[in-house]
Image (cartoon, rainbow, N blue to C red; front, side):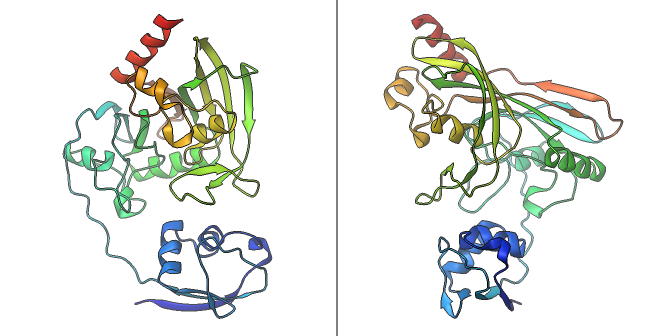
Length: 309
């Protein structure tokens, strides 16, 4: 059954968007808050509130919280190209191919890592929401590379804490347009959902703190290969940060990349790859590191750029 709740908007949420503020206040996802607002189940001072309206401290908030949803059952389904690089009793390290989401989400009907692992008969931790059990971090659908999944409950808790405390080494390789100056630097710019396009994110003054370190390791005529280390892990962080520098990832049309260069390189997605992942093993604390080779489309584009230089 649904639950109706009335409470004041706390000072700490003053000025935040309804979807962002209520997600923090109620512990629900932004997707759930948006659905509530669209259904008229979010009122501020007696008037329906839209997802992008701004909260004012002290206003009277009335919400109808949804009842518990039926757990989503993950049906095993083989995923082409999904590879397990390493596994033991506690963790499974996988190489995620392009076009695969990590777990089911509203509006996504394509392949997922969790369904692929289930098809392999691989047992994962039962902690977390039903549709994302064992998942401790994510990669975009269009981003390939290495990621870790928890198999034991101990590993799940340990890895979630490591990602939250930023002790995991997350190294990406990105080919970006142009030549970043300086060739080595840090992008420290807050990120939040784009104010006009819900499918995008952007650098927003009141967004969540986001820090990206980069170093150009190879320069081409029209692009650069950068090694990127994430200090934080926001959605689309690398793509948004390099776009804000006016050096978007090659092929990333969502964030302003040149479509003619993408066509020339035969790229249908952003040139972005999770290259290495390092962390303390949850079972014994030893440092372990895993690496993923470039997939065929990214390797071919890189070869083409080298030929042109």
